[in-house]
Amino acid sequence: MISTDNISIQFGTEPLFENITVSFSNKNRYGLIGANGSGKSTFMKILTNELDASSGTVSIDKTKRMAKLNQDQFAYEEIKVSDCVIMGHELLWKVKQERDHLYSLPKMTEKEGMRVANLELEFGEMDGYTAESDAEELLLGVGIPIKDHEKLMSSIAPGLKLRVLLAQALFGDPGILLLDEPTNNLDINTIRWLENTLKSRDCTMIVISHDRHFLNNICTHMADLDYREIRLYPGNYNDFMIASTQARETLVNENAKKHAKINELQSFVNRFSANASKAKQATSRANQINKIKLEDIKKTSRVYPFIRFNQGKKIHNKVVEVENISKAYDNLSIIKKFTMTINSGDRIAVIGENGIGKTTFLKCLVDNTFANTGSIRWSENATIGYFAQNHSEEFKSNISLIDWMAKWSHKDDDLETIRGTLGRLLFSQDDINKPIGVLSGGEQRRMLFGKIILQRANVIILDEPTNHLDMESIESLNHALNIFDGTTIFVSHDREFISSIANRVLEIKSDKIIEYGGGYESYQTAIGNGY
Image (cartoon, rainbow, N blue to C red; front, side):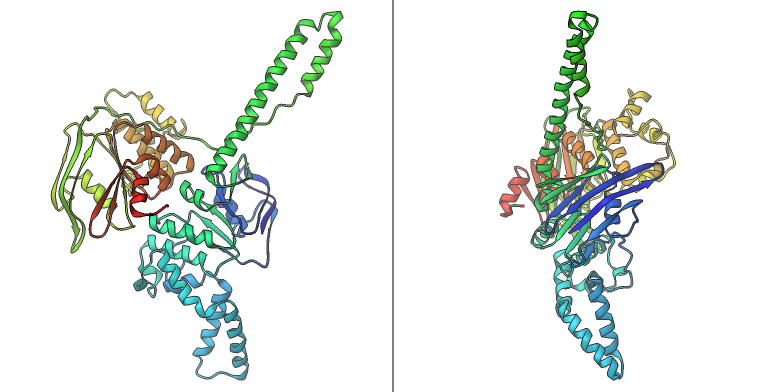
């Protein structure tokens, strides 16, 4: 059990949230959701005592050990990977360190011998004798090979460090588990493993995630941070969307009925208030108006960008022919003699393990010279809008947002068109003159969508477009691609995103690329996996 009583926090003049009183019950799995900037991560830091609230208290069941997903991937650089996982159980790690130190002494005193005996008892009670094998199992589960388990954290890639920290949070079966974006940097197979692992845990869980499929699979409840408060809903994300929409519609409908009644009563009052014979009736109706209380429908913090991709010239038949392309880095072969045809209107999802070559494949399509062998022949009318996974170079200058966006405009686009595009992507009048170098990850991505909008591309190629986006932006992008009548090729680990868009799936493996027609569901059926 973990609960809060009147938690408030304020930065500057406005409170981020206020007077939050909520209880997270034993063994339930809560998805903590809300718009970017609503305070989800801040609230979680208050729960873990990393941040002091302006007011209010947090109560935690003292019989339960709490674990959280550490966000600082460089905090353990001089620690072995396997040890980093075990450090997730702080008391066990402390006992292990003291125990190992005493055993390393050339000679023990009687007092030290007695201390070792007590430590051995504590160590056993905390399952210390299986700690190394448990850590190894978790590391394999998150995709860290055995050869890396004894390496220092400083020697493994940043993406793998985040996986180690996830294993650290899961280690030792904590009674309370707090996870902030645990699916970041995970491929689809590892996300499936994580879902099964979390569902098997007998603990209270609070998870922040923008992965709708993940939330649907693991959550027993949703905790919605909006209107500066948290409301709990039973069920998963889909259940929450239905319930919250219906609740708001009910309030709106009730207010509409009340407004109609008020107007009816007010009309009578206006007509007959000066009429002596009906003065009492008019007074009675005026009193009725005063008794009608309209429901307070608060303004949501959720804001949806308006994303629409409209192609310029339409391609009617083949968009691109790929013939026998191969790509290798040094002696490592990534793509081997791959051939395919992409037609107008195709929506192709490219999936596979991290590091397998998905980004490389997209780069081959975008740059005809990138592949080592083979040919890529685009339609002469093809206009490509490319969204790179690593796009930091595009935002290193100090030009303003409006000047940057103007670079991608058509000759027919005037200044108002560019301003309108920025506005629909949630950049205010005050924002458009800011230097692009100060934009957040999510803001940069919205700018790239604006670039593709202005390019009027008939082929859109996207590499992990939902990373760093809030739920509202993901849903807007999802809808925009669904109604786009051009050709889309994209890499994603978001199964909801893939399922709702793709009509073809390419799975890149270490030795081949396999094509599945009929979308993500056909792919699931073909591999015999219900996830």
